[in-house]
Image 1 (cartoon, rainbow, N blue to C red):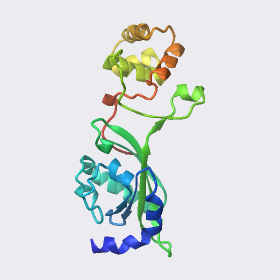
Image 2: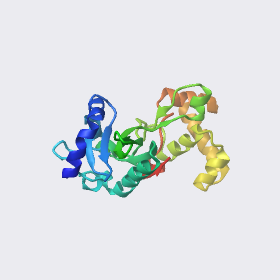
Image 3: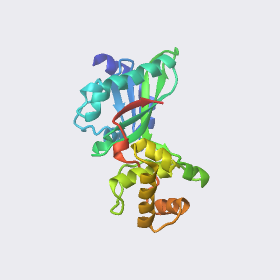
Image 4: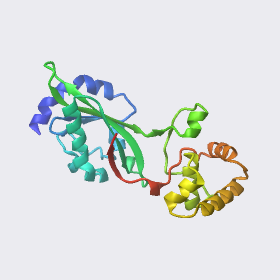
Length: 228
C-alpha cells in the first residue's frame, strides 16, 4: 500500500485531466494496483464511494467484474510489455445493470522522465457498431444495446432481425440456428407482416425508425474480456 501511495504523485497531471472527463478513466501502477479513478469510473465499475481503491487489486473490488481480475491484469502486462496502447472488449454488467453491455477498454503505458514504464492509464467507452446498413447510408456507428422497448416481435424473431440487419441471407441464418432455409424464410415473412413492409430495404427503414438497428440479443453476448 505504501508503494502505491509513493507512486501517486507521478500521475498528478493525468489526474487533473481525468477529474473533469465524463468517460471512465483510471490509473494503475506496475503491480496492477489501482491508484485513481474518476467519478465516471466509479459509476462504470459500480464501485461504492466508501471503498478505498488506492492500492487495491482488481480481485479486491466489491463488484461482479472482479471475477475477471486475471484477464484484467493480463491487459496490464501486455500494455507494459508492448509499451503501446492495447484494447479489449469488456462485456459485463457495467454500471450495475442487469443486462450485459460491451465496452471497449484501452490501456496506455505511462513513463517517467527516464523513459521507464511506471504504470498504465485506462478508459472505457461503449462499443460502437458500423452495420452494412449504416455504411451504405454513410451514417455514424451506433452504440450496441441489449435493451429495447418491444412488444411486437418475439425473442426468436429479434434474433433473426439482428442477423437480417447484418445482411445475412436466409440460408446463412438457417445454418446458424440449425433449421431449414424455408423455416427462416417463413419467419422473415411473418416479421415483414408484423412490420407492415414488403422488402428488406423497407424493413431496414422500419428498424431505424423503431430503434432496432443497434439492438443485439442478450443471448448472443457472452460475459468476459476479449483482446482486440
